[in-house]
Amino acid sequence: MHSYFQELPEIQVFKTVLFHCVIIIALPVLSFFTSKIFIFDGLLGLNNVPSNVYSAGVAILVLHVALGAFIFRAYFDDQSKTQAKRD
Image: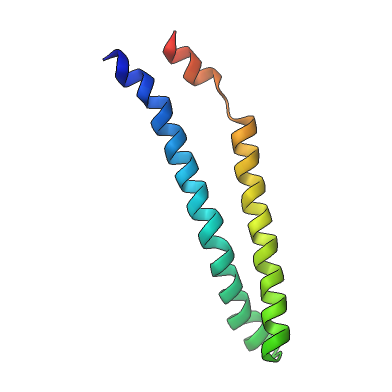
C-alpha cells in the first residue's frame, strides 16, 4: 500500500502533462482551420494566401498561450499536497 501513495503523484503528473500535450497539439490546429474557414475566408472574404498567413498567426498566438499555461502550471504547481502524502 505504501507504493500506491508513491505512484499517485506520478500518475497526477502524467495526467497533467498528457492533458497539456493534447492541448498544445490540438488547439493550434483547430484554431488555424476555424479562423481560416469561418473568419478569414467566410466573414472577411480574403484570398487564399493572406487567409493562410493570418490563420497561421492566430495558431501561433494560441500555441504561445497553451505553452504559457503549461509552463505556469509546471512552475507554480502546489507541491505541498504531494509532499504531505509522502510523510
